[in-house]
View (cartoon, rainbow, N blue to C red):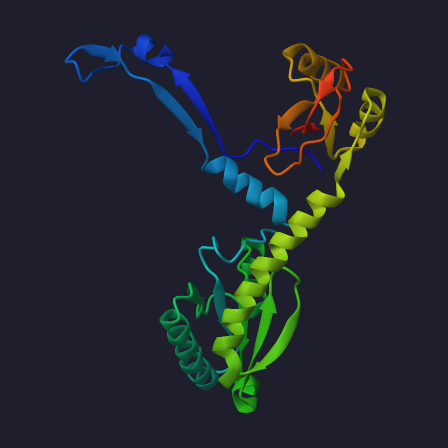
Length: 258
């Protein structure tokens, strides 16, 4: 594992305001250079989601942010089968929409079902519903979940509560998988030599730091790594800085980044 810069905020002071002559009228009626901040989110967070959750088959999107949460793919051979299957598919579509679920019914006749399966797997749609004449006869539908690639048949009259719960389950599974990956790749290290040896294999390392830029610079220069953050939830713990040996009361996270 490597670190990735996600959402950040920066206090820019008045530097840019002075460079571009941006002023405002203060409460005393005098002009003053504006104070600026910068908030870096958007595309970098999208990149983080893609890198954290996806696999070799394409995107794996958490249901809460997926543009399409469920896709319905009809399966048929004849025009009569198409009419029957699409009627049932549209019923499912309407019911899911009424539940507030983002759903797409892909009734295009220009692509085969297998092509559509691969397309929506690549796009990371959390749930795929396939329905054909045999499913209608058996009063079932086939459900495929993107995160585990598992498939199962579900009774038609149980479909709505099943989909609602499955979206919750997929969200939790994706989160827990990523959290577990982070946890098993996070280690405590108490010496610079040990950090130097282990960090070449990736991962995140909790180390004691004396809070000085001098010690931080040694980490940057010699390991090509950085102090990523000071964890809020990390308990206070007396120790010695791995660089200077000076007292430290809390560990910080050191890692290499992409």
